[in-house]
Amino acid sequence: QMSSTRNAMFGDESRATSNMSARDKAYTTGKYRRAIHFCIEGPISSSGQETKAEQKKEEEVNTLLNPLKLSRCIDHSYHEASDTLLHLLMGKYDILSSLRFMKKYF
Image 1: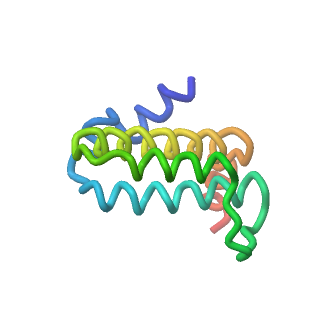
Image 2: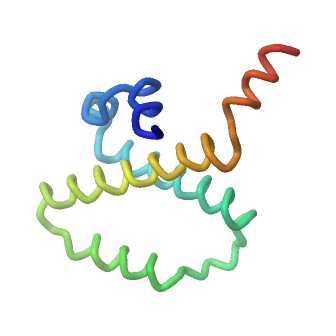
């Protein structure tokens, strides 16, 4: 159901992001991950401490010297982050009900 809702709202993944540069996808992915973190754990502290999983991902990205592999990694991360954020907003936070309420009263 979630994927059909996502496809109805945003269309096919490949078409939705085909015009984005790798830089823009990486930047947007970071924004999505920050929003996901905020939704799940609350405000992000400025301590600068990274989890081991984040450090491992950074190491993996640093080893990707092949531009094709890097592009695939960025695409995968982008789609994973956007799907997770959409799931949170549509499921846990029921954003559609909030939008309907605002539309009705504002």
